[in-house]
Image 1: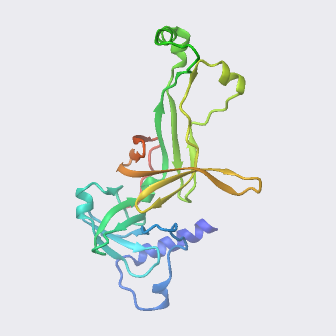
Image 2: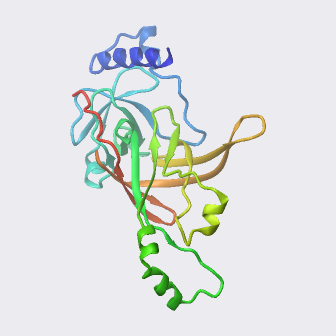
Image 3: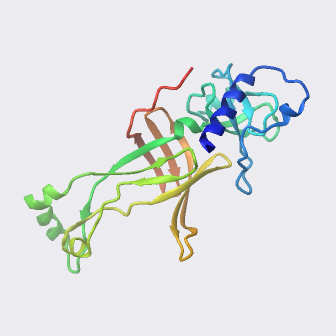
Length: 251
């Protein structure tokens, strides 16, 4: 029911794009009841008809008439992430000196999906293990067969939840006996945008069943295309590929 209501509001909002509204109560209706995270100055809304490489026609989440932002400099600086189409949910960082200019644009619709990268295992460090021993172990055919890439990543969902990709059921005995180990998987369960950056939260449930954040990573957008995502974390950049082909969006 909630999704159906949102769809109805989106359809009504798209129909209003580009039309000058009369100063009635209808013009004050918001298209979403979502609120920003504390401290987040990003503006959210929908892309309207008329978007180009230099102009973003944008219906704010608060409702009212569409805004038109100049995104020429953002495009030149590669700060437009995604390809806005009519009805796409958008996140916009407005220039603090010129409210008609957008410094950064993110197509949240295009961000949705499964983003993956591949990791390789490494030999477990053992007491007394020298480089010569490592080379000898890596030359063993049985260990070579075990050195297979694994797919890690996360799924971004439209309801601001996330799902880790790459989880493998392990037993204590298997972990102890294996001569190799894979990097620790980040188990992201929540996400949001904060001042144009992507925040990914690892969470768990406490004894009362409440979600508790146990870890948080913040990343800058470097590149986002239909099949490629590059994020810059505190420890460096990481590239992702889209696991599934994106659905064709209405133009």
